Amino acid sequence: MDNAEMDNHETDDYETDNSELNDAELDGSELDAPELEAMADCVPIPKIFHSVYEAGPFSKCVVCTKALLDDETDYMVEKIFRGSETIVEYAICSDCAVAMYSELSAESTGRIEQYLSEKINWQSRLEMAMGTHGDDIAQWIDTCLVTGRPRDQLPGYQLCARCRGPKLQRFIFPLMIAGDVSEDIGRLLSKKTRDRMDGFVDEYLGLSPEYRDIFDGTPLLMV
Image 1 (cartoon, rainbow, N blue to C red):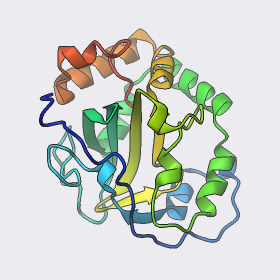
Image 2: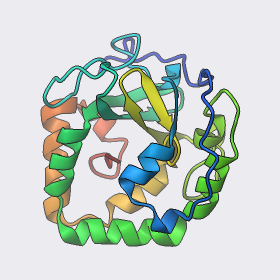
Image 3: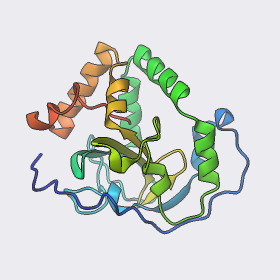
């Protein structure tokens, strides 16, 4: 990627308008994906999740080029930073994300799920979401989901958000993962899964050699 094009000044700009959260009791371990989605509140997509290239919200899926800003289109946004510079960014529609996830080995997905279940207090995060009535997403992305380290003290990190059309869904997502945590998770992947991610990066993201050398292997994608 061209450094000049990726000069990024939005990292502190994540304020949004607010919608009211559902006033419901929950036990995250007992809720499935549709129930969690129904409990999410939606806010306009903040600038930190905009595309640097498009100078606004991502408009199409990186894989199938489906339009993303229709009201009922679900998709994920991921951005990888080194300091204030965006070095990887993409959006992928839910259909393509599911298809990609289905190609990952059961060994890899099992290891990752175990790692996350041991490292993350999901209940605490759900309670945070249910108790939030502010107009920004700062508390979702200002500290690493796994370690709790502040984002402004990290040399590198990844951001991931779930969106629907022009809105960001605020519940489990958005989230921030420290770069070294991402590398730790990446080491849990089988060769089959690592090869699949390498292929995705090569085909759709075009990560240049100078950026690839930053990582311990191809960057882990959190879709």
